[in-house]
Structure formats: C-alpha cells, structure tokens
Image (cartoon, rainbow, N blue to C red; front, side):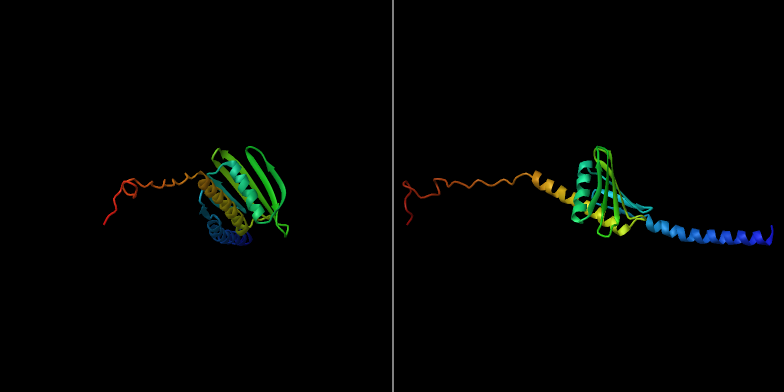
Length: 171
C-alpha cells in the first residue's frame, strides 16, 4: 500500500471512530422515553411519537383544544375515520404538524413535528397540552357519571319522644 493510501485509510478510520463516539451518545440522549397518564411517547429524528389508550375522536378533540389553548392558527385540518392531519402555525410562522392514526377502537398514535428539523421542547409542550385536555375530559366524565350522593331522610319524631296530649308532665 502506498504511503498516500495508508494516510487516507488512517484518517478515514480516525474520522469514523470519532463519529461513532459522537453519534452513540447523541442517539442515547435523543431516544428519551416518557410515560404519560394514558400512553407513552418517544423522540425520534425530529418527531415526537406517542401512543395512547384513547378513543380516536377524543384524540382529535384534544389536539384541537390544545391548539386553541396555545393560540395557534389552523392552516390545514383533514380528519377522516382512520387518520387526521392538522397543520398549525404560531405567530413566528413556525409550522406544527400533527398526524393522528387510529390503530384500534381504543389505541391511537400521534406524531408531532415542530419546524423543519423538529423542536423537542415545543413538541413536548403540545403533547403535554393534549394530555392535559384528555385528563380534563376524563375528570369531567367521571364527575358526570358519579352516582349521586344519597341524602338522608330526616327522621320523623316518634310519638314516644314527643310530648303530646297523652303524655304526663314530669315533676
């Protein structure tokens, strides 16, 4: 092997070793996993992907409510029986893409991407707002379906304890 090719081979190996050392921690750091109240989410290549034990219409409603609460402008909203695509924009023109997929009657997947490269803090904020909306809806449903408390019937005084015509005064 010529000295020139030997130098190129050594530099290539050194470069690959350096990249491998840098890529591995980055992959571990971005493979974060968080468990929410009714689902789980992970960050992958700029997308925040969550899977939830929720009905599909509830997830669509929660995404709309979260966007409204965050004062986002709706640019595109396509919803059908199995999937939904929502495209929101903030005041700075940053796009927020939401994709929902109905997997089963009680299993939905949500994918959130903020901007071109992905923005983990903003994606996590939006997902947190969706979870908050779902929790509020569950709490409201629990309150409305809760059994009414039984109000005790006031006791009617018995004739033995109430002084009346037939009672003698005590001296």
